[in-house]
Length: 375
Ligand SMILES: Cc1ncc(COP(=O)(O)O)c(C=O)c1O
Image 1: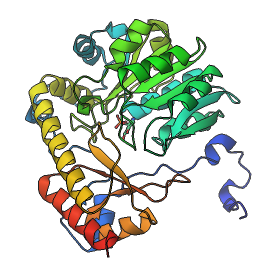
Image 2: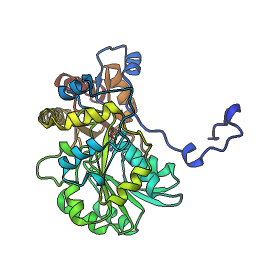
Image 3: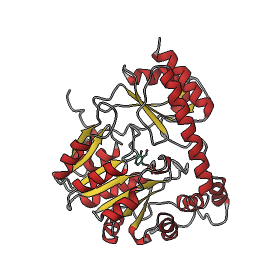
Image 4: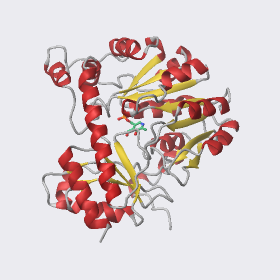
């Protein structure tokens, strides 16, 4: 296929070729588009791993309080939020950098540590930005496929780490598949990681893990390898629309350089206030997580009844092979007013990811899959 020709107005411009060649991010469908395409108004939004129960009422109170001053610039250093987070996760606030979502921290880390020609290791299927952000700065990305039983390929990951890539990006719990590394497996990867590799452990779904699974911040600190652990307010805390996440760095020098790579006023005033209020109401978050996990497991059983086997999940979603083009299945579900995410990475086009919604939404998902997959 020929590359599309540039429009007249940009014909004489030299784009950054790494950015111009980026694959698109496979974002979940918007509510407006889903309504327009399906004709339904009551849409079950199961495509973006959001919290179907909303967020803590304490967040809404904080945003309605006099403390929220949209006309002022927010603190570029997020000092108060970092203090609160430092106490919450047990580290020095100077080792934390806050981002406009943890996705911004993935971009900042890539910008801070990669130059053209560097190499990054991650997995496939992957969280898109673990590939897109390194590619944007000219790095090459080696992707280690999941095993046939939908798990991490530990020997292949160890072998790739021994080659000392500049960055290793791994989400655990793993988006889009669902499993998380147990302590022994995390220790194996830490042991294989070389001193010149930055080990980026993305724990966006940390709060959904079953009890007894390792806490990446604690394990990586004890291991004393250069690392960053990423956490997000978008999932368990239900603040996807506010955009706030954070990077817990293994030392203040890494934090300084990651902070230098972000935009100055990256975390807006609403996000800073909202995140502080959310942390202050952990009970709300724990209740929501328990309800989501229960719904996830109930949905898994119902899918099993249809002969669909989802991967192990320590997250708020299920990932499964439809055995047929998942984009077509997603289109069928959309006709029933349900948004899911069909996977587009090469080799995984038969996989669908659907997050746990409210009970009635999950029932709709199962009924619609029954209609579209088991005819
Ligand atoms: C593994 C992983 N990391 C990071 C993110 C980004 O989260 P946010 O930018 O909303 O904090 C996501 C979002 O889906 C994710 O799945």
